[in-house]
Amino acid sequence: MYTGQTEQPCCLCGAEETVARLDLPPRTVTLMRNADPIAWRDIVGEVSIHFCESDWDLVRELVLDVGMLPLSRCNVAHASMSFREDFEALLNATREEPDQTELEARALERSREVIAAPDAEPVAAVQARVVVYALQELGVADGDGIPSSEHA
Image 1 (cartoon, rainbow, N blue to C red):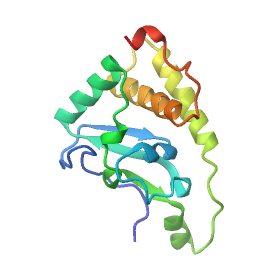
Image 2 (image 1 turned 180 degrees about the horizontal axis):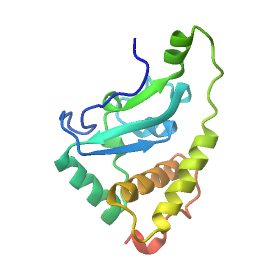
Image 3 (image 1 turned 45 degrees about the horizontal axis):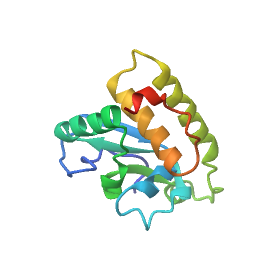
């Protein structure tokens, strides 16, 4: 029985060896390829996507230098996530539908703190911008998350 997240291949090319992982709010899966059958409200916790070395270099450049959101190219089948039903089966009890707004608010706040920090690690900087860009695209966050000088 599946009871938690596992390491997954690169969400862009499917390569088994990965070098970077981004942890994203559940609603962001709706922006990924093949996400139609996923009930994002039933996801418990964050969704993790992984990247191989060559794809990570491209993603880092697209996000940090160009200001693009790469999620539409990521295959949700390669994302790692836990579903409410998995916990229900394990515990033999029905759980309430998770309220994702608190998780999204925390992720957005953490992301804005990382973006404001001049010495943020590259993985943290990419994850922060992906979270902000994705939540803005989904209409969950306003447009003030990233200073305009960093979009150029």
